Structure formats: structure tokens, C-alpha cells
Length: 222
Image (cartoon, rainbow, N blue to C red; front, side, top):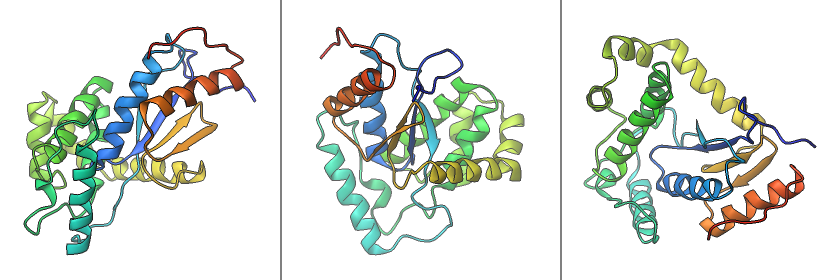
């Protein structure tokens, strides 16, 4: 089977995940590092939405405790950002992952750089600063700070078409076999479910090149 490539001719990498998931953040860092070491054979890592919860519902006490423990575990990883558990403490916690995912989709209409900037701001606000990015006022404040054209962003953020597009992306991921986040799709035909170590991601990408692209990896940086 020939590898799927991007329009640049490079092999595509897509990470399906939730902005509220610390493991997705770690996976993104590690995949980016592993791909960069392979001398431009892979396209820049793209992100795709995979919400932990779409329909709004207040998290239970047990769910909040689970999220706190998860962030504590993730924070112990050597390459972890300075994660905080504040988002899920004191009876709080986002009711849904939809607003930040919709916000990134709306920002993408102003270009990939705008989407990347807002995405970074949203997950930092949630997982480091403990802000509830499911609140529209928080989303709008962060979008403004990122320099987005708010006259364009607000209608796009609220548009039913943006909601439909994000839902369609999630359904497409399901059709491709994605069942949990974070999940990496390499070249659209290899699926790597769950977060892996940097070493494991290096191995996956090298094996993909060898088996799908017929490429021998002569040198990588470890």
C-alpha cells in the first residue's frame, strides 16, 4: 500500500485529541520531536478534534477526582508542561470540550497560524492556569489576546456550520477507527492509539518509512 501524502508530498501526521487532555499535549510534543528528527519526510503534525465530552454535563465528583489524578500523573512526566489541577478542583470543571474545539475551527478560517495560536492559548489556560475554557467569555478573551479579527471570529465561533464541520471531523475519525484520544494517524493508514513515549514514536515513524514508503532510515538524532 502506498503511503498517503500531503499536498507537499510529505507523509501526513494527524493527532486526534482533546484540548483538555494533558496526554494529548504530551503526545503532540513527542510526535513533533520524532518527526523533526527524520529530516523532513513527514508533514507538520496536524490536530483533529476528539472530545472527551461533547454534550454539556456537569462532571461528577468522581470524574473530577479522576481528572485531578490524571493531571498529577501527567505532571510527573519528564517532558511535561507545568500542569495544574486547579481546573478540576473546588467542585468545578468544564461541562463540555466543544467550545474550545469550535473556537480552534473558527480561528482556522483566519489561517493556520491563528488557529495554532488560539489552540496553544486555550490549552495553556485550561491545563496550566486552571481556567474553564468551555466558557464563551473565556474563549473570546483569549481569542482577542491572540490578535484574531473578532469581527470575523465571533460569527464563525457561533455559526452552526462550524459545529457541523467539527462534528463531521469527529465522525470521520470514528470511521477511520479512532476510538480514544490521543490517537495518531500516520499517512492515513497506520493508527497509534494512546500516548506513547518519545522513543516509541520514533520507532513507529521509522517503521512506517521502512514498511510503507520503502525508505531506509540512515540517521536519526536521539
